[in-house]
Amino acid sequence: MIDKVRAEMFEAMKAKDKDRKDSLSMLLSALKNKAIDKREDLTEAEEIEVVRKEIRQSKETMDLAPQDRTDIKEQCATRIRIMSEFAPEEMSEDAVREFILSELKALGIEAPTAKDKGKIMKEIMPKLKGKADGGLVNKVVGSILA
Figure 1: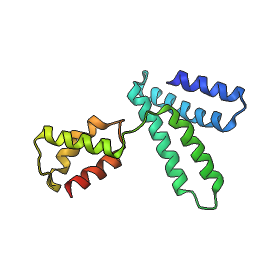
Figure 2: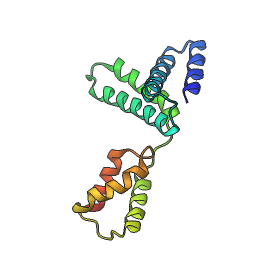
Figure 3: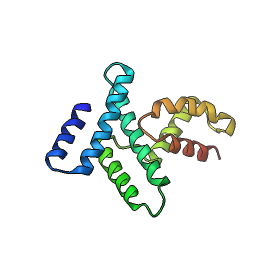
């Protein structure tokens, strides 16, 4: 993915698209830093994790920016849009619910209670890592328990 991001960044530089170049440059440095920290090449899952982390940080910045700072909000929205090109589509709420219900059947839990939440999350989260947002999974599990 590092090579793909670098190639896209060079294309943006040639096209004099500053916003795209800056966003891709941030993503490229995040990917490189993670590889340096790990001391070896990143797996595809790790690359996706880095991209999602950068997107999440941009969303947080956009949410925390004061209302009158539309420049920050626009910049973050642009970053999110550009970085999202490198992240696979996350599972929808319906798909997550369907997956959880099938896992509950596999675990033999027919009437889950709040006491079972830790056990359920422990089984489900590793399987959904990188495929679905953890907050969404938690929300769906909570709704199934209620």
